Image (cartoon, rainbow, N blue to C red; front, side, top):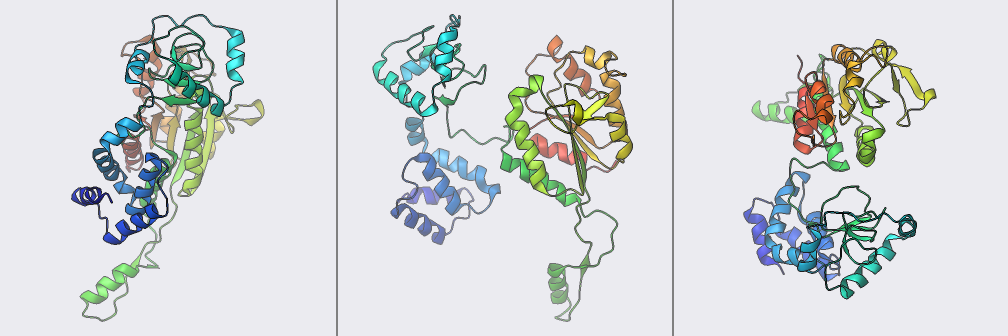
Length: 393
C-alpha cells in the first residue's frame, strides 16, 4: 500500500528502511491511523522518521503525495460560501449584549454541531446577522463580527476570540520563519549547551570515542584520550514583558517560560517581569504584584556581567515611557543600564512589527532597536539570537 509514497520518501533523501515500512503496514492492518488524514500523517511520521531534523523534508513529501486528498479534506464548506466569507462586509453590524451572553454559554461540541447543521441549511450569503454563517453581526459562525466566541470561518483573525478556525489549511508548509512550538523552543534552548564546555577546565573526563579512534590509529596499542567535562556553565537572565499589549501573547509567554525551565542547561537561571519597559522595579511573578517587586538596581548589583540576557517583549509602548523620567530615570536609561551591565544581550519579540516605518505606534520599537539587536521568536531568528548571545566579544 502506498508504495509510491515510500519511493518518494527515499527519493527525497529520507532514510526509510523496508523494516520501518513493513512496521507501518502492520500498524495500518491493525486499524491505526485510519480515522483521518491527520492521524495517518502522525502515524507515518512516528514510524518512518527517526530524527526531528527530517520533519520538514517528510512534511514536504507528504504534501506533494497527498495534495489532492488534503485539498478535499481541508475544505468542509462549499467553495462559493468560503469565497463570500473571505471578502467580509465593510460594516461589522450592531453589538447585541444579550446575544453575546448567549454565545458565551455555548460549549465547543455544541458549536461544532450547530455549524454542521447551518452548512447543510445555508445556500446563500448572509452578512450582519446572528444565525447563519456569515460576516459581521453576532453570529457564532463566520468572521469580522461581534460575537465574543465561536468558530471563525474564512477571513482573517482580528480579535483572536474564536474557539476554532475552519477553512484554513491544516497541512501548511513548515517554514523557518514561523513562530515555533514548545518542543522547538526546548530544542533551541538546548543549543546553548554546546557552548557550555568552553571553560578552561582540566581534561579529566574519559573520551571513549576518541580513545577508540586513537587506539586504532596506534596499531591497537591502548591510547587513552581525555576531554574537558561538559558543564552547565551558561548563566541566563530572562526579562519578560507582562500585561497590556502582551496579553494576546500570554500562551506564547507560558510556553517560553516552560521551555526555559525544562531545558536544564543553565548553571543559573533568573527570570524577572516588567510592564512595557524596564524601570525602577522588576517583579518575580507575571502578575506584577507589589509584594513581588525587587529594585532593578539590586538585581544589577547581585548578578555579574557573565549572564546572557534575553529581553522578551513586543517593544510597543508610548514613546514617553522611554524618554520621560517615569521611573526616577527614563525608560531608555534603564535599558542602557541593562545593556551596559550585560553585554551579551538580545531582544526577542513575539511577532513581526506590524506598523509601518515612521508610524507613531512603532516609535518605541525603533528607539529600542537602536540599542538592542531585535529578533522575532521564530526558528531561524531564535537560532540567530542564541548565536549572537554566545559570541565572546
